[in-house]
Image (spheres, rainbow, N blue to C red):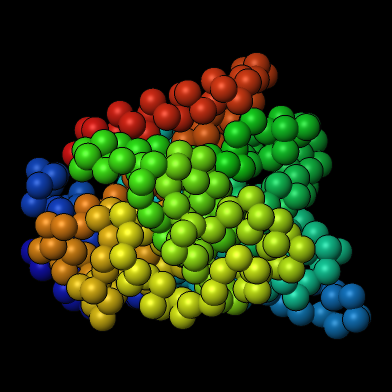
Length: 394
């Protein structure tokens, strides 16, 4: 049977990220020993929901946004995956992310199926009131498709604890009782778990520690380059700097900064809080974001958008470890190039950034028990799972 990735027949799911996810899946199918019919089924989502989200804006105008929720598989348990707000969100992108989420949960051994959601809006251009309206209306439209034992959302790009609180409140009001398990990534005051905000970045660093030990790289004399300084990138930079690694370059959507002696991450974090960007940080010099990826370093951490490592730059990377903190940061063509390069160890996204969904699982379990762990226990359990999974893979 010809694999679907070769047939160019993806229907409504067609997008660069979905094609990439399926191609990666097809590349390992011969090793799985799974029936070809089952493999064909796993290439596509089980269920998709597309809703319109009409909202009256602050200026009196009514705008209609599109909302998506894709469930790749519910065989292992409820769907689990983030909700992103971004103007480029579409069905194909969300579907590809749902596939990746399913494999991530399977790799870590969590009792969830992969899911993902999104709304095609730009949260940076919305007032708090408009953001709340979009979230509550989206939740109302999605109620037939979600639930604490059906599909559980979490923060992703453009969403946060506040968005999760609105979903939690809207869903609970609709069903008539309190349902904290409907989302994870909530604040601790709303039955969230300690350590959730930092979980993805910490998981990245736990993987980097394992890779460093495997390659005999001393962390306290190493260099790291971090693309992206949002939640994942900033926590990764903070955590790896605490281990003595020099973070020599960091970027965000507006630009990149470089200091060969290492950036002061605490000062940089305060600068970003004050200005909204890494640009203009006093103890650094500007650098082209594309050139930043090619800097000589031990650890390169793409923690921003998809497909930033591609056929045109993969062969020129000068890192020893590529830690995929973002979802799908490396294209299929780049994967092939890196596979031939024994000098670069790749920690794939479905392992490297699995800390977030792992601690989301911890939160979901704590909400069932209504018994909450301290942050030390959360971090210890996370480190054990990430380290054990890394060692099982390598």
